[in-house]
Amino acid sequence: MKGGAMPKLDSDVLVINDLVVDRGAVFELQIASLKLKGGEILGVVGNNGAGKTTLLLSILEFLDREKGELRLFDKTWNEDEIFIKRNLGAYLDTSFLIDYMQVEEYYSFIASVYGLDMIATKTRISEFLDSLPIEFLSKQLIRELSAGNFTKVGLIGSLIHKPKLILWDEPFANLDPYSKNRLMELVLEVKAEENTSFIISSHNIEEIYSIADRFLVLDKGRTLAAEAKDVLSRDDINNLLGLKRKEYLSTTSLNLTKKL
Image (cartoon, rainbow, N blue to C red; front, side, top):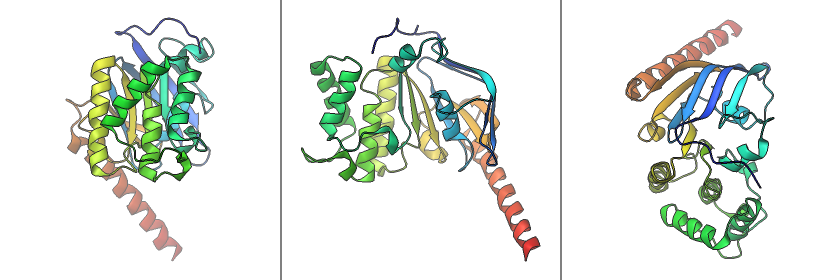
């Protein structure tokens, strides 16, 4: 891939204004305004079905927008798709992996796509594997790995080309407690050393609160809060999500009673 100059360190890596994404009968995602600067970690939290994955898919241009502005590195996808892909990394689910490859083969493939120096890339991958070990046999296919190791392959793969913005959807879901802690440490290291921004979704606030700088709290596509961590405490977020959960359970119970 070839692209333009790297994004400026002090510029917004993401700008969203008046975004609307229709998910049919499920919900409509509405983001009035959202900005992310270089080196910031945004935690996107919400109960299941809140719109977290929809937001990430929209940023990747995998979903059509009803309306709204979305700029990455001060560019739209139509203006410079190659530049955006060069500076963006993502792992949302298993479909982001080529699972019929072996782990080392997959990483070499990524390096070739981005035109990376193979020796430097191997050193970078080795450092990531020291931080987030993956258990695999030399000839083992990715599809044959455990769920946790499968996830680790995808997360590390999204970091190989030194992107300036990383999108991860529920990255802690399949990891054991030790690996979760190592992943958190790795995120903070990459942020500090490379000024990388992250958007990380999670339905579990405890997993993301310690590393995020800011939070976007969603419920059925609506924004409940969008604040920095020094404004929005862990209890604030839990209370917001807890109230919505109680409303859902109360409504569900009432509907069931009516049917009976």
